[in-house]
Amino acid sequence: MADVSGTTLWHTFSVRDADAMMAWLRAIGFTEHQTYRDEDDPSVVVHAEWAWPGGGGIMFGSDRADSAIAGTGPAAAYLVTPEPDAAFESAVAAGATVVRPMVDHDYGGRGGSVTDPEGNHWSFGSYQPA
Image 1 (cartoon, rainbow, N blue to C red):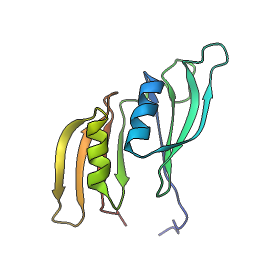
Image 2: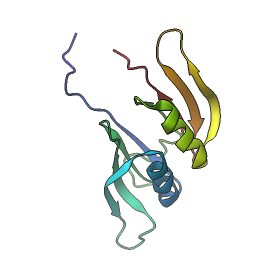
Image 3: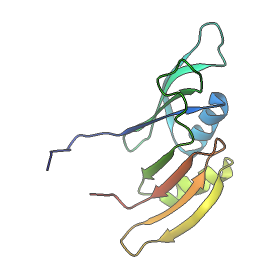
């Protein structure tokens, strides 16, 4: 098996409304690292990097034909956090739709799922896959 120590995952997808997505991400605990906008149309996000406080994060941009990630949404992500209930509740308060309520799992950990305002599926859990 390969040594994966120090590995960090950055999930990548495109969005229809980058400003609304940034507001939603901020509400659930992500922080803006970098956001690059189109010089001719500042409503278009060419590339954005938003970090999760526990490590890793996401990269995204406005859905546009010339993007390297065009057509990648909706997407799905699993966010591991020691406080999954707090992240889940923040997501719902910020406009997410509950897909699966928070539950304790037989295999360990606790988790639940929502869809964000763009239709992307987010699971929040405390279970850390090995």
